[in-house]
Image 1: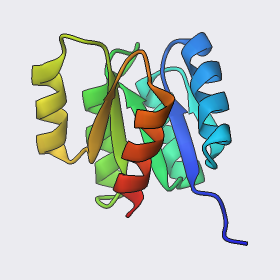
Image 2: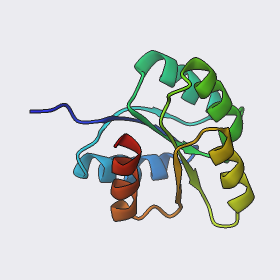
Image 3: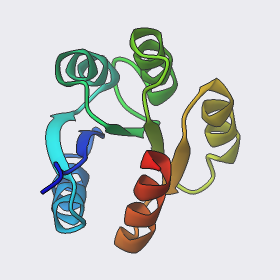
Image 4: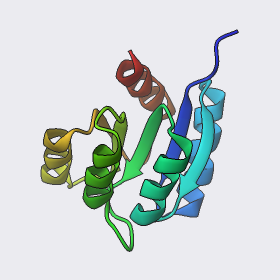
Length: 122
């Protein structure tokens, strides 16, 4: 049996992390860590080296753009998928230029999430 892809889930909303973690587990992914702010996200990435990162744009202490830049400094090949609310298109485009692999709109559609994450892993 092949190992399930590992995911680091980064969002300041504990409720969203809980919901997304359940959706990820059902889709065959393993949530290996969670972070509630950008600084935690970078630290967790360094410690866990997950296959994928789901990264919210709007977080305290260090926002998603800053965390993305720091994660890519640690690992230029990091597979980061941005989570964003509607109306953040320019922020999403900036993150994609910086090196994010894709993005998902909130609220997260479980089928879209599974499809995007598998595309990013391919």
